[in-house]
Length: 331
Ligand code: SAM
Ligand code: SF4
Image (cartoon, rainbow, N blue to C red):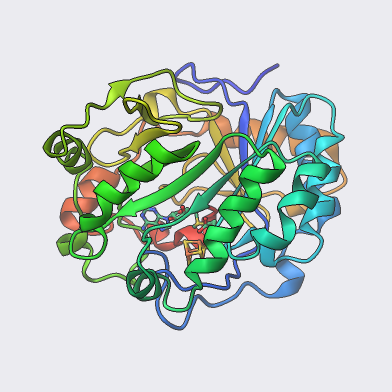
């Protein structure tokens, strides 16, 4: 029986956070000191993850996204991709990464069975990139993007969180990037996750700003079919463009009605929604496939109709459970 919830939504997509650790400290994701790390022994082993994916696949999970934290800082992640690719029923494996280590891993990941990659890049200006990531090397990410295109990860998407006063003046540059290269640039609305960014209210900018910028450049955004795995993004092409544009607005236009996702945290908790505190630890059921199946069903059965992020954006976080930031939950 597939994983269908009380509102008729079928779940075929599992996002797995393989680590809460990261080699960057992005201002919208964590504070300058990073996050308090989950102890090593609490992090799921690859063997445990593979078993959970196999059970998920029996229940209709087809798509996997590997994320974090930064997935490429966890040792052996290529072998995890290889293992997942061998599980019957899994037809799509993607990764979200900050791209810093991609120049080293792109070819091996492709060979292991990774199909596509989302690379986070919020600025193409060195000083702004440093300000956002607090420590990143822009050149490494650009090399990572190049390597991903060269090895044939397809499509290569760029995740860009729009922030007023930080990178909003670069929207035009990102639109041109999608014109010149076969890259799909997804602007993401800044989300009020975690309590590390007290400036959220001042930095939030709705994505209508991207449309206004395109219009002011005389550049029509042409509605288009989304590329593979575009999920809830509103998709566009640009005249003569090699790539495309996606707009992801979880706040101003939430897309809960079509949500098909489940999330597995690095410490083995299954969540039905990024933005709700409910989560069920799977580790107690490790090794018992029937018990794992039951826990999958419980999580899906308790999924809420929609999240409260819009309210949170206006009034501050709405419940303490929402404070698990993206690096812990898996963005
Ligand atoms: N480290 C990887 C990366 O940065 O791509 C994967 C994990 S990261 C948490 C996943 C995505 O979440 C990134 O694209 C990041 O930009 C996004 N993200 C993190 N915090 C966010 C926030 N407060 N609002 C919107 N997007 C956020
Ligand atoms: Fe690390 Fe990704 Fe969070 Fe940036 S967004 S700090 S790269 S986990």
